[in-house]
Image 1 (cartoon, rainbow, N blue to C red):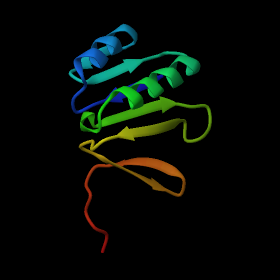
Image 2 (cartoon, one colour; image 1 turned 90 degrees about the vertical axis):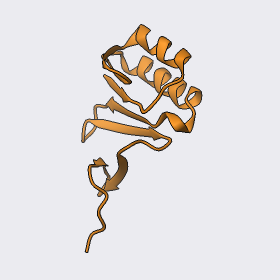
Image 3 (cartoon, one colour; image 1 turned 135 degrees about the vertical axis):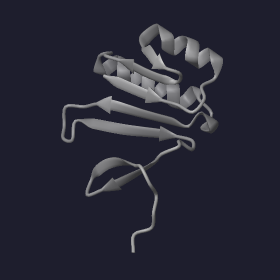
Amino acid sequence: MLVVIANDLPPAVRGRMKLWFIEPRANVFISGVKDAVARHVIEYLLKSCPPKSGLLIFQRISKAPGYKIYGRGDPRRRLTEISGLQLVLEKDDPVI
């Protein structure tokens, strides 16, 4: 399964995404593609989207924690890793 969230996608990429995914909201795509197809889709997105696209890609994997997150550009939420666990920061406040 893949979930793709973007700030802005090029029209050609967005049109192609609609072949594989449903788009419940603008620039939010969800699909249950197989793992081999998911890898090709991720490679295509990372290669074809400029950094201004602000991509966040969530891929289901069989190992703990059950997902892998890819990012490209400047998404509205920042990615971080704590003890090997990928997380999306809601607020980026400095820890005191």
